[in-house]
Every structure is written in C-alpha cells, then in structure tokens.
Length: 126
Image 1 (cartoon, one colour):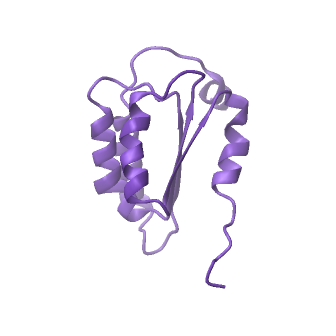
Image 2 (cartoon, rainbow, N blue to C red):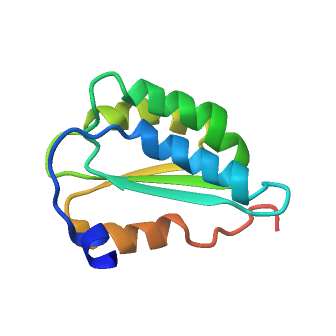
Image 3 (cartoon, rainbow, N blue to C red):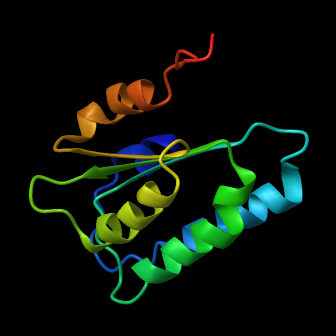
C-alpha cells in the first residue's frame, strides 16, 4: 500500500536496473513519446548491487532518455555519494538540459527538492 511504499525502510541488496527496465517497458507499452511529455523522477539512497550501476546508465541512455523530456535523480544519504551517483554523473554531463541530480540528507526533503527540480523554467529566448 501507499504507506508501506513511501515509508518502508527495507535493507538489503538493490538491483536498480530492474526498475529502470520496467520504466522503459511502461513507456513503450503505454506512453508513446509522440503523444506524451514524459518526465521521470528517481529517489534512492544510491546503493546498488555491484556491477549494476553501469547497467543502469546504459539502460537510461538507450531506453529511457531518448523518450523523455526530463529525468531527475535525488540521492538521499548523509555520507559520501554512492556508486549509482557516479554513473549518473556521466549522463548529467552528456544531457545537462534534460538530466538533473541532487543530493539530500533527509527523506523529508524529497518533495521540496523534486518541486525545485521540476519547477517551470524561464525560456532564455523569450
């Protein structure tokens, strides 16, 4: 349920690429990019199964980013960046206008950060 989804504090190995693959499948099956403006947001502690973070980067690069208007990643950790962050930094450098990242330390900051990341931007050509 919604309560468990948003507030569960499960621990253990995470394989993030399965969620990214599912995201790509949902886009392919339900939301043709020609008909939809697609925005994706991911929040994570950044910890990922060894060797899976490069798979996440490749999946995003090949199956998700070409179909979306914007992708936002928020890492929630009080320590150093985790392995997923470093792979995603490569994407942010390649797609600076459509791929955003931010680190926060407290889960309560997720909403305000996403609100900022997805705020309407002023068109510099206007």
